[in-house]
Image (cartoon, rainbow, N blue to C red; front, side, top):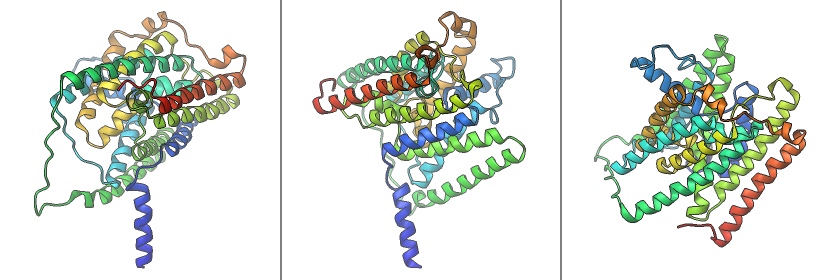
Length: 390
């Protein structure tokens, strides 16, 4: 019996006491994203945050008409809820959940960064997930434009952070010490996490039982994504920031690998489902480029992208909780009052990459070449530090 207990503890430690390799996250994210795609709603984060913002403004009377997407049952909202819940439950299982304060300047950066990300994601048709990762996987040319914008925005944001370090040094927040004789919540967290995941499975079963099968599948896939990116510490910010800040390219390699795998899976699905060819192909490249720059600056200020902010909020980080809220609110306001569908259409029309290349084969080749070139340049910089700014 003691041997079984030791083996269980050893296996639990591998899963929840140590971070998973980023390459594992890259592969699993591509597979879970494919499940979302097959279920009829590609993975995204900004759409769900917009639903949150719409309902907040409707509840306080700013919007007179109820939002068209349900807060709990609509596909975009449930993808974001699932991401948050998966990250929260994973943080409990790994004993990493805690409300983490931050200095006032960091909280302000979370607020401003959230606003930038909210505005940029509207212009780009999504955040780093929907506007870049899933857009490229779906064959939207705007995804490449947002990739360029994110690189430019990350450089601008990093320039500011370097200036801030030099001119506005901040003191770390005071850490609370555990009271002597108080309850050690870290010992309780795994049990709370187990109970929470049982609840989520029960919720999904209840949705399916009531014929909400698609939302149930999407929620379970999103919960899985939340677990994976929390355990891998998978954040798209790192792939755009780290090569210029520390010279490390491990996150860049992971994102590039995941994009290539996603393209292969998505294009295979679209090959067999001709009526799905234009799914997620409603972005235009100008909005992707400009929105990507704005979003890139915001994610550097906030310290997390769309998905990264949500899973870090699930760990209890106050700065990212603020960033997620301002992201949701600014996205809703900008979409409803500025970047309307009519205004967005005036900036240009969307393009499906296989239509421009004459078929899926060359579209896959071009996408793979772009990702591998990004990978190679950042790997070269990892050896030479020629592009490193810090």
